[in-house]
Length: 258
Image (tube, rainbow, N blue to C red; front, side):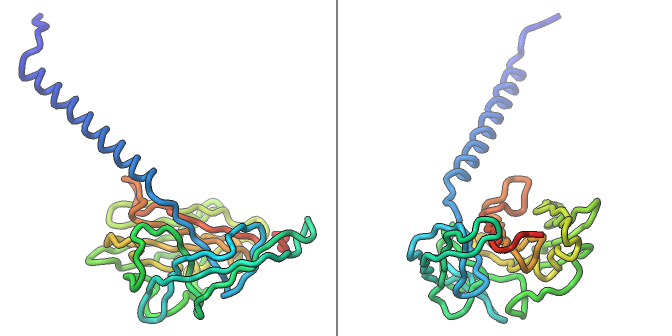
């Protein structure tokens, strides 16, 4: 048997090794770039002045507020002032808290810090269309929301209930991604699950890359605690449509949760 490696075979092996090294280098570069991405913070206020326990923000901070009306969405500077206070807790008596007050006259959908584009002004909005705020209506599962993005892109948001869980799935074309899977609340049951029009607070293009970003409220106790998630297309991994960029969860200390 001839065990010599011919020149064509050797060249093929070298090409394969070179391709593997190049792919590994690109993968490492992507991981390094993702690690260097700035941290994004998100904050949700139910009203212009709201008291939070166990938060520790500086006395005065500058945020970017996401605002919307029936016609447009925009980002603008918002100053947040904090002052110390105490609130009642179910199990610990009085606990330290902060009163956060925003400078803007209208209430933003959310407050952000560290957006990659750093832009302010008008931003593309894909959802909701033609109304200012989502209303708590519609079913809690078994529905699909169709969202038209830039150009010919279309996104489908589905809520599927199975085995005491509700899975929230986002798809674009043939790509599908599980965003969240929530267990149906054992205390209040299905009544605590968010309704269709409470789940997606906003969809548009925050990071200016022409792809949809999503602001969601996955909360099994809608109306009691505060839960908000920001998904950005620029934070997506290769198998994802969007990546979780920031989230905010808060439960009032005077609510026993049962």
